[in-house]
Amino acid sequence: MKINNMSNPEALKAYNSNSLQGVHLNKDKESAGPAKANSAPTSDKVNISSTVKLMQDIHKAVTEAPDIRTDKVNEVRSKIDKNNYKPDLNVVADKLLSPNMNDRI
Image 1: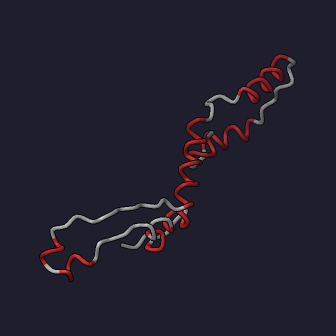
Image 2 (image 1 turned 90 degrees about the horizontal axis):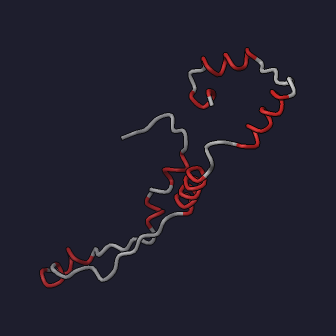
């Protein structure tokens, strides 16, 4: 299967064959004959690549971040109290009508 228009090609590099260096497969089962075919592998090991570890750390930081940025709320609140808050209505309208969800936030 081919994937076009990858937004993050680095993420998939974590799953290529080079990142499976720490996984040990028992390939001798087939060539060793019936005596070794029934034996269990001696050890299995999985290493997580640094890219996947970084993605996990980013995900954790985002989920632990507060939903409300109190510094921004306090800044806007003080502008409203001083009658200095003048939002650019064109920017607000553009963000509300934007097809990109990230622009609406």
